[in-house]
Image (cartoon, rainbow, N blue to C red; front, side, top):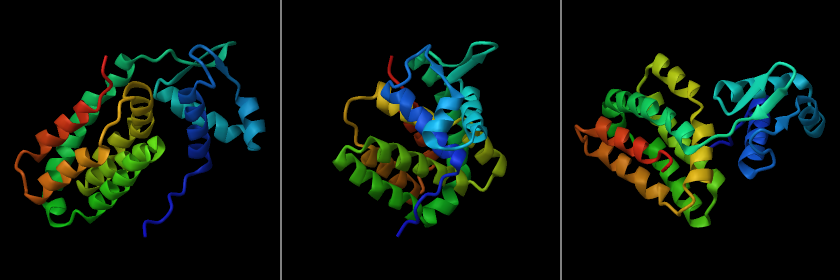
Length: 207
């Protein structure tokens, strides 16, 4: 059984704010009041401030002197910018991890199985969670701390959430897409890096 994912308080608050933006609770240009979130969630303002700072570093929100924090007016083009960078990193990760993952795809298979259930249930949140976990397993298997840190700094979960929820409304078989990557690792496909790069780019929002 896969152990439950434990998120830090900052991560929980970040997800709460992100959900509010995705759902339309906070519209583009609307102010997000740190103190109100702290009161609503019954937490101090420090972790709220940390979560907002992280979302600002990802350019999801913006702050200005005497104006506070506001939601950016994001477009599909904004979201697309991170995908070529991510695709390049994952191409390198796949090539470095190819030997290890060709021998043991169990971790990837678990995420594909979970994605299959999420697809059947139409559970968008689970689709995001297990899609990100699948790709994280590949990057982690590369065994390169710098690569993993750089990949994590892109805010993959945030952008995947927005891409799937805002710009990919049509049903998509996330499980099948990722099973093809697993199969490529198993057969030791020499083009695994290019395959994963193409896969990531195919997930970018359409404009």
